[in-house]
Image (tube, rainbow, N blue to C red; front, top):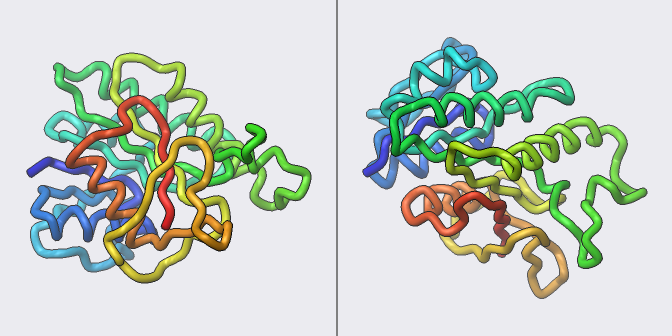
Length: 213
């Protein structure tokens, strides 16, 4: 059993990560910005108020944790890099072994076969460019950071939505995992399975992975 802290626990992805980890018997702390509007979590899940971009908030829950999961969202180009820098800084300052960081990032940072990021394609929607670029900044930060162990998780670039928990998936690194129809897709539920599997049996330390059917 691990002590797992989930930032952004009230979001669509965060709720499912909390539920999956709790169902497997992990000790879960759900960090939310507004506890009065948070959903009902499973019995035994501790709910605290906090912000992944705040060193004070992170420090308050990180000292006893084994894993810090980031499923939080926020505005502005700097948000995700700030979150990454905050978690790495706090974790690096803790007695070793420090908690690992698992950051649920963006699918637009994945690449086409020629190495072009999806967010750099001419067809990439302008409305999502800032958020995608912010997640790319976070990934770049992790790749050049030191002092903390991290894993960055990318969902598919397009077909990622609430759905069924099948418990099956395949993993890849920088390119989407595609099915027989050439499309990359996975449900929030099964990406939560992949994330908790990574918490239990780390295979992608200090790197990025993606998952799909």
